[in-house]
Amino acid sequence: MTQSDATKEWYEEPIEHIPSERLSKRYGIAEWYGEPFIRMSPERRQTLANIALQKASPPPLCPFQSNNTQCRKKGGVCSIQTYRKYPNKGSDRLGLPVNPPVITCPYRFDQNNLVPRWLADVVGFNQDKSFLAREVPFMRSPNTGRPAGRIDLVLADSNTEDPRWFGLEIQAVYFSGRGMETEFERLAQDTGQRPPIPNEIRRPDWRSSSAKRLMPQLQVKAPTLRRWGTKLAVAVDMPFFEAIGGSSHEPSHDLNEGDIIWLVPEISENYQLEAAHWEVLSLEESNKKLLAAQTVKRKDFEKALRIKLQPI
Image 1 (cartoon, rainbow, N blue to C red):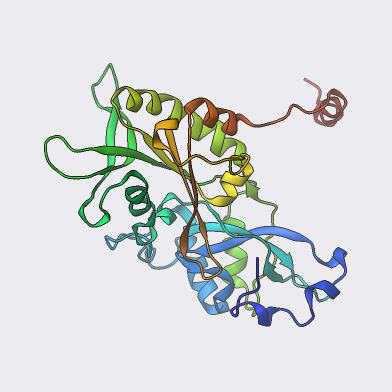
Image 2 (cartoon, rainbow, N blue to C red):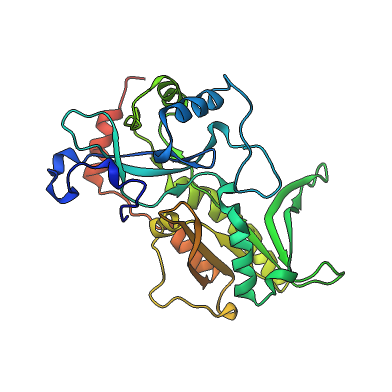
């Protein structure tokens, strides 16, 4: 990531002159209640920490949603990001971010209605004459008849009796590691100008977000929409997409060549959601992406096994 004007001042020496052992990296908050974390004053961090700990006023309005809705994400963390440690020897403070933010809240994709407007362009709808529906029931329980599954968004070219429409699923990323409460408690007390290094190791859980969460959604919904003569689109951010293999060698923009339209935005240096990449893949190709993983070698598996074995 290029250093932005907002963060250049965080370094007092050129990055290329800093010894590698002083550049330890760790995931931390990138956006908190819709605000860039590294631009916050200590007082603002304390205020938001108390809100996250439910010790203060209700959460602020989500800046990414257009209906003046309060933040519904527990703890208010919109995205996380890898940071370098501040280079001063012995420092316990954050330095510059290393990579673009990873979206952890699905509402982060709502900024400026970028994703549905982008999908409208891709499928040939007029943006200004398109319609959007949220959480449309797609499955129902055979026992109760109640909705048991929904499509996140449906984009239609009209609200008439027989519109053309496409489904749209949004997938943010889960993270693994301890919860954020201890981090919020530290931030509620911290008065340093730069934020402290995160107190725990947390990282995106690509496997749970892709193979365990997103793939079953596609397997259920894409074949049905294919039978109905339409398609499913899915939006994930660029770090997610790169974690499952990234762009195809020759990305297809032909809607007739696949079942799923992949829309891949990313968060810019200025913390704006921007269109980055899109392509069309079959359901089978999408499953291969989402399942991409290598079995460890037997010796490595058994080494880890020996460490974990405990008496019954």
